[in-house]
Length: 86
Image 1 (cartoon, helix red, strand yellow):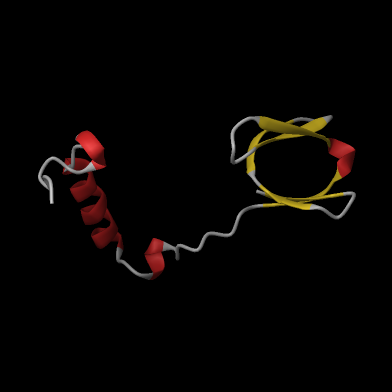
Image 2 (image 1 turned 90 degrees about the vertical axis):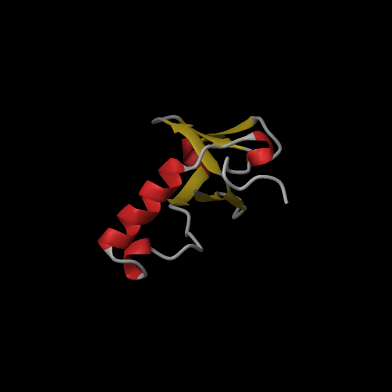
């Protein structure tokens, strides 16, 4: 989420929660920051650098990739069970 506050400061953070009074964002170093709703002038969704998969792969190819990823089991160090150590 991108926000622009009344002081023109731009923040790119993960939205934790929001209500009529405040917006709560998660900070990269941990913790949260609370902003009064009236201090937030603009909020927008994040822009992904990853292109939409349906523009690259067919629906069947997407299903095949998801099915393949579902067969992988995470082991120590985050490597797949079949990958082993390199």
